[in-house]
Length: 207
Image (cartoon, rainbow, N blue to C red):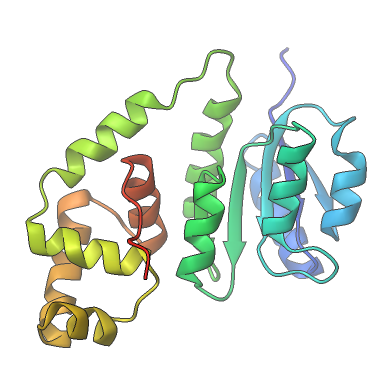
């Protein structure tokens, strides 16, 4: 039988590590967890290829620094970022640096499993992200110019009120455009919307 795909969990919260391990092992993956980013970094070079799930806010070394250290050492682990803070600018930074997904706590079990399943595909030899980028771009082609502006504001991490002020519209109108964004792109969460936008090459405008 072929080896099970590997998934690595890095989180300083033992309860999160345990619950994720049980969930992901139950879906047929081989799971190993680490209580800190440095401990994973120490072991990484000797680990079989696998998907990395890492919390973005941890003592000693956060998920973004771990991502950077792995890249510096040319260690490729398709990465899923999890956080309890819903920090959009951090999500943009992580995804621009190569993270495949950004999931906010508390998350549904199926959301994690779907994300892991998608990330496993990135381990396949010859994996090409261009089809995903083309599909994302096609979804964004459905947006109106105003919806595109609202999307750029969300990518910049701006709250609805700030986007409304910049575009000279009401916060309620921003909410309407935001709902239409989710509907047209099929995104089920803000993190999924961000992933789609970045895959399609959309970047937040500099302040």
